[in-house]
Length: 242
Image (tube, rainbow, N blue to C red):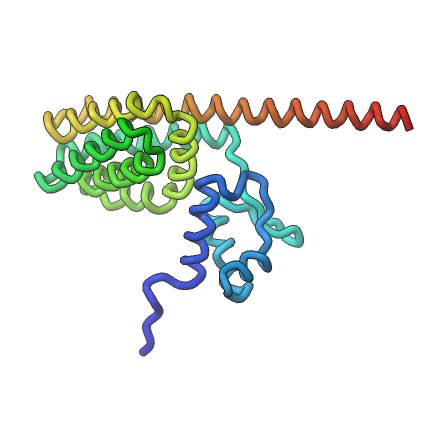
């Protein structure tokens, strides 16, 4: 019997493209050229095509028959729905962490919170983002709820990472304020064992993030509409002159 490697080529390609989308190196609405990507990575188009199907399930890419694949837009409706769900599920995780975590779980959470604080003090966006991911994983794994962990680190993980990177990127000056949310969560969940207050603090954090990302998305939409309007008026003037 021959066993497949832990991660197939398609999964590795999907992770590569996913990181580019999350960091906005591939912009919302941008078309992904299968042939160009295959040449860039030195692979055939078959695993690229499979990778795009994986990304479509993760809501990062939209594949349109006969038109190819493009990066999905993060609409205001999607952002609001996503953060509402994240807030409630992570609140549940924080409550269960307070009730079920071991001392090792609590040490890991406190260490991740210290990394968040340090990155916030230094204004290190990437370091803060990575510390946030470690903090969320430590919290979920300490909640001892495998189904909750599977949902948030599986089905919703890519969308959460994309939205949170967006949130961190537009709040460089607010990283210290953001880190305060995690101080409160850690206090209630890992020090006092107060599940209700830990859940409340987790929900407050995601409400805060939602507000910032929604504001940014709506501002981008207004700029796009204004630019489209200017282009249309310019085209009309040119047509009249002609």
